Length: 50
Image (cartoon, rainbow, N blue to C red):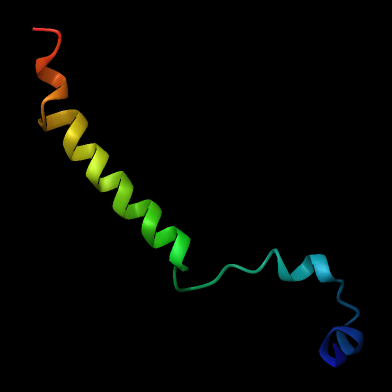
């Protein structure tokens, strides 16, 4: 709180911070993306229209 007052920051400023490390939700999202990428493009899904 003191840091915000000293620098005239508002609480919305902290939401603009880009963190160098992914958080848990980003890691889960990336894992899900990789799974669905494999499933949709090389799994059983491309064989359906044939």
